Length: 216
Image (tube, rainbow, N blue to C red; front, side):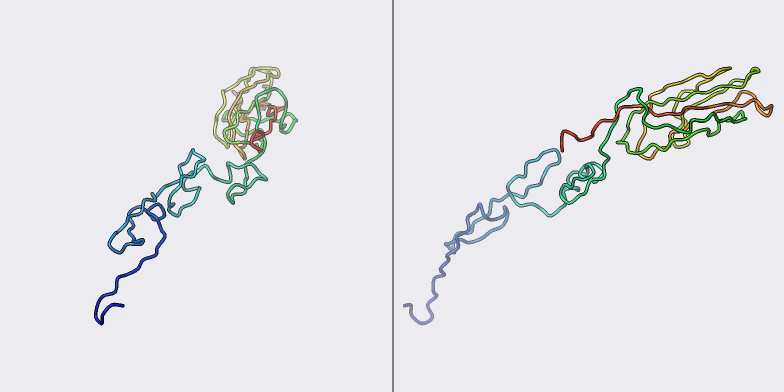
């Protein structure tokens, strides 16, 4: 037992090791005269890698690390890290099989300026999906010419086509997104004389495949 007023030696019984403490933080273990520094590094999860490195992680979200972790990139019916997928489960390859058909009847318009003639709402598509468009145009007899062109959401995207006389069919492969309007706009070379531009059999063609089938 020490004498009155004599300092008592501190007794430390810590069991932490430098590998248990953050790098840059200091502590005493079992010797009050030896200051130790931790060695656990601060690490981050890297987008593009499935590895979770050992270390101290700063609070964040996985979608901040990788913005591709989004509901639109996850197939419907699947949930990944709390994000319920909304992506549609089908995609298409180009073919001549009919997927959607617009109004079949022959519609006529009389005007020399391009006017919306027929429209199909494209749905259930993945992003930037190539689709095969098809339509037929005809002009009234008597020297008039009908012009037709594919529009997407009221903006021209297709090649200008023409027909002078009987029905002529046209096919063109174009890109669409879910919810786009695939439209046929037409005009005639003459106007106000009763000769009209005619359009019929607007269709979208392709073959459906299962999207993400290798991931499910």
